[in-house]
Image (cartoon, rainbow, N blue to C red; front, side, top):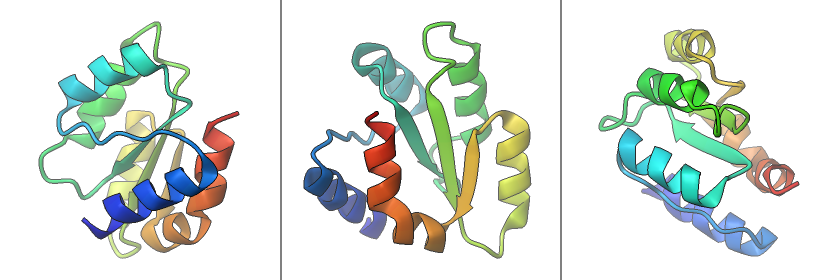
Length: 110
C-alpha cells in the first residue's frame, strides 16, 4: 500500500496518469487502451504472476515495446534473476526504485 500511494503522489507531481490493475488480464486490457510507456511491477505481488505478465506483454505485438520494470527486496535476488529471464527490461531493488521514482516516471512519459 505504501508504494501505491508513493507512486500515485509522485506521478501526480510529474504530471502523468497511473493505474493499478490487479490481474494480468486487467493490466493487458488497460495497456491496450492506454499504450503506456512503462509498466512497473512489484515482483513480490502475491496476486500477480510477474513472469506470466512479462510473457503476455512481450508476446503481444502491440505491446511488446512497452518497457517493463520490476522492483524487489534486495535480499531476494532470485526474483531479480527470474524477472530478467522472463523478459523484464529493467529490475531494480526497492530502495533504488523509491529513490529514483520521479526520474523513472518522468522518463516513461517520453
